[in-house]
Length: 279
Image (cartoon, rainbow, N blue to C red; front, top):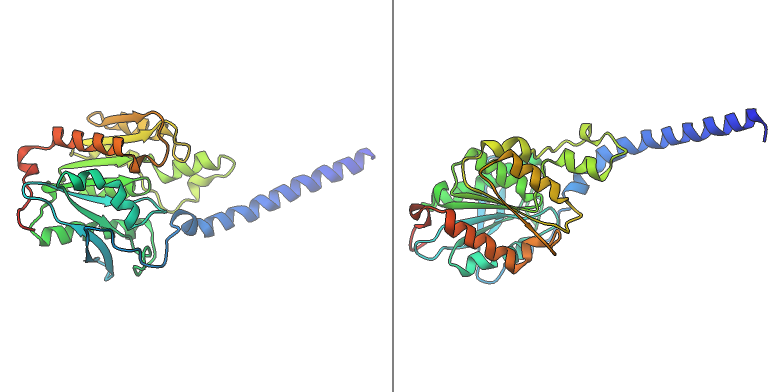
């Protein structure tokens, strides 16, 4: 092959790569909502021991959620699940707290589990606010509420803990921010400029006044433990638990849930443990 032919081949290969790159970026931008929020359309079965409730969002949606009232003198845990989970998975992730008499609200997002609407960062925050509003209507103030966010749900829980003075915040397998997570997954793409949904936990966590527990599996390859370490470094009062032998399924590990319960019992003030009786 002549030098000129080699030059033309090289130019063609570079041009083809640039064309493919140029096509890939818009495709990724357009597809990101489906990748970030793989919502399931059909309603999940209500977990045993839970009642179905309706949450009214500020933008006019009526969302199905699950509710288990607290035993007398116990707080309420509000759980925000990951992007591929459901009410049943959320119930498994809060089993130990339910056994301990905590009230538990399992929030189901817009677009998930048969709920109306389309998922997105602002929308999920609105769904979380609707959950706290429902509790307030039952006489349960934010000071009696423990927020728990797993994986994607860590972004919702952190935002609400920034807005309301809750009793405690528990982040399970969290990320520092979605752009940072996406950049680690696709280092060849300028993804930080493409991600519309920020969920910037790293920027918000230092401003959270509530006690914070961060749990992460050392073997987690979906979201690396470095995210949890960065979050703990940004919030000096946070308790970091890096758990060996656990991966991104940490939320369903009974041992990890027992550690959550023990930490909550240690940090909650007596007044925060006194949930409203008879609800």
